Image (cartoon, rainbow, N blue to C red; front, side, top):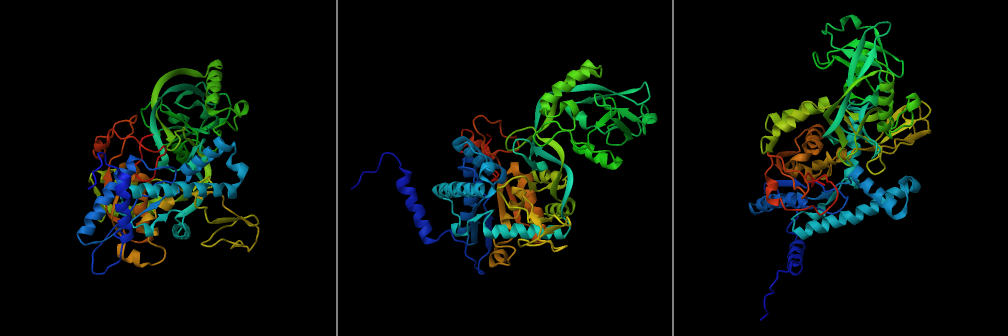
Amino acid sequence: MRELPKVYEPKKVEKKIYDFWMDGGWFKGEIDPEKKPFSIVMPPPNVTGQLHMGHALDATLQDILTRYKRMQGYAALWLPGQDHAGIATQIRVEQELREKEGLSRYDLGREKFLERVWDWKHQYGNRIIEQQKSMGVSCDWDRNRFTMDETCAKAVRETFCDLYEKGLIYKGSRIINWCPHCRTALSDAEVEYKDMPGHFWHIRYPVENSDEEFIIATTRPETMLGDTGVAVHPDDERYKHLVGKNAILPLVGRKLPIVADEYVELGFGTGAVKMTPCHDPNDYEVGLRHDLERIQCIDEDARIINGGKYDGLDRYEARKAIVADLEEQGYLVKVEPYNHNVGCCYRCGTVVEPLTSPQWFVKMAPLAKKAIEVVKDGRIKFVPERFTKTYLNWMENVHDWCISRQLWWGHQIPAWYCDDCGHITVSRTDACECEACKSKNIRREEDVLDTWFSSALWPFSTMGWPEKTEELRYWYPTSVMVTGYDIIFFWVARMIFSGMEQMDKEPFKTVFIHGLVPSTSSPATPPETTCASMWKSARPCATSATSSGTRAAL
């Protein structure tokens, strides 16, 4: 007789059990016309590092549902995978290059740098899989997918070309969110707003050929270098006689057309708003309506351009210099402390700079319509139901989605520019010539697609779409999507409108929303989220946010 060990040693027990399960093929999803299908696609963890306790919570919930359905006699499929996580992974690899070798990606060049990122992916992608196996997850590992594998890449290109041909993808110069640290555009959903202390600077704007003036308050005096107009409300009796005249921009002397627009809130503040179309999304729209000039005064490094003596200064250095000059020349009326919401990059926390830039966009209004209907009519249900309101509120107010990213790691946009005639060729296969003039003098778009563009296709790209596979016919739509409340906008919404557009069918029947696992230093979980209460003492095992919907606060 052998004595039982006093301490449980999981390594001696759990691996044997899991190997037994794997050898027996007990987790394989088998198509069986005699059984009802049940399917879950795993929210793919980012290949930025190891898993954390949030992933453990997410995987546990999916595992419970899948095992329960197997025992009920369903043909159950739990399909695993990993996400390439464009910005996050590139930042991690660049950081490692810088710290270990003193190199930048530009020192290596695009091809060699991408080789390094693929090495990183193989290392951490495999580690993620082994971690999940050690937890005992009952996935069908034979069907494991990666958002940049051949199958998913084909789906991404097909979707891009299809939407472009329908006029739903376009390239244009519009106001976008720019992260000066990550040096890439961000979508609206990738900007997190934080309450920060600031100031209201009240500045005199003289009216041309008049003793009158506007007192205009701003939280960003450095942007006045890009002012091209002053807006007032059409019903504001104080300023009706000034509409059509010009104000004079302090320090610069530029004439600013005075326009009437209902964007200005009647009765709020002084009733006059400076218009900086290149650096504020609302000003951009007002500028379009009134044909205001566009002058960019802050570049992609957050330094001043087109600003005369202030050129080359960091935006915050310029702020100090401009405020000092306004005070010296008698234009500064007063300064008030003011707390306000400031947009920050969701990855690195840098304050985002709104600026006008040529980017690729998806027209969201036509896509949002179907995605709203499918939730309102009950084809997709949120559990808990209260998150339906969160989803609908975002979808009903959605803007065009900026999908281009100034990165090297990701799905390179399948567009080629002709240097002879200027035509853009978008193709499902690599183009060799311009489709318009047949010139060979073409170059490929260097930008890659937003990570969420590929993960939006996850419920059907993982099953072989655009091919009409048996898996799609049997398991799509999937049964349930298990994820955290933090990526309803990032991911859930995009999967829904992508499924409706590409498959003409909802991607899942139920969205099961759970809470997040906070770190010991993170703020408390929101009141509407209770699942995380059981993990209050848990600490994340990784140092990067993930696209699994179970991000730990870092």
